[in-house]
Image (cartoon, rainbow, N blue to C red):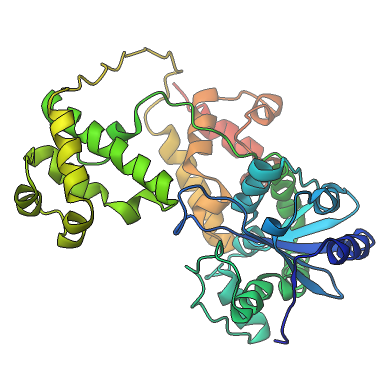
Length: 376
């Protein structure tokens, strides 16, 4: 691949936006740095048309609205590979909506491709081998190595050609409408803030059986780790692992040797020992009583024994005939929704929000209705 310039100046950005605005389609990808930063964001945006590939540095600009307008233009198809995370990230950081999507990962799934990673697909169709050494790279660092920029550009530079190949295969198998419905649903994807009020430290695996004293220590060392991670702009696991926090909470250490005895790594004790001991002692003075989960009874329709199994049997048989994964054809959650709804006709079946139109058509509306309403 020839070297790709990083777009960091407004005149170059304005010229790029002008050129891409005239394109009929644009491939897009983003790079983040959740493995390296406490507060993640989009640190790189890669864009390719049929004529060029550009890598835009978002950190260099106060305003990227021109790119957002391109992605929102219904006349421009935006091609992603595994669009979900990119769409959520772009909405979170810029409130951008993408209205015309083609996802090569979904296309590959609907074709029954055995490997749906971008690298595997590029190697299969174009004999292009992707070097994976930058998969965990720190895209937040500046300046970026030229080799990293070239690597990032490779995520979109061949994406339009792959899109054409996969679309041709979908058309040949009469599955293009399946893909179009899935792509349309992607335009509603948004970054959602978790609303679960449960404190995050209580969601850690391994807290079952902790008494109030241990939970008090865990809460304290967890909060210390969060503060340290935010202060140093590192992901929490790079400060101290969850297991180390659990070990501290169980051991109730009062000095650094007891931290070591509890299993906390030597390097962590050397770097954070005094702070961890202080946090542990603080938590020991404030036992934490986990709030009791109120059991709320939700009335759900009774599903006769065997209905979901019957639906799975139909789904699995059709999936095998089509050569695609059963969960791609119709997830178990959708089958359960059908069983609960027990639709009596096509209208009721079509009103089940979890069921795609193409799924109902492929599985057969009459068969689904019959299996969802077995004889008494």
